[in-house]
Image: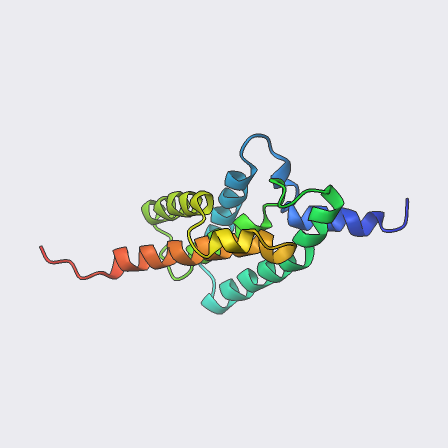
Length: 157
């Protein structure tokens, strides 16, 4: 085994979220679906445990995604999906595990991830891990804000 081969494998394993990013056609969507699955796995636990997990995913993404870009010799390659996992988990923060809300969060997140509203597009233009992770962080935050407004806006009927 060549020196650094294990390190490179771990970088790919983490940044592609256990190789989910290598699924064909729509790897970002598969990464977002993985985020939904993790949300449901953690939904019954403590809120602090949830946020610790999201924080760890964010740190792992920041530590590996820029290195994965270099290994793959491509700017923000589609197979890096840890950013979508993190963004989806942020989008679902403080929300109930109601399937209708989760599906709406998923759709809003994917749309915002594609549209890259300010400052997401600017962040994606940055090099390295911040460029990979930043736009999905913004899309996750914006999705959560939209859903919080929808769910908590006073209804006058």
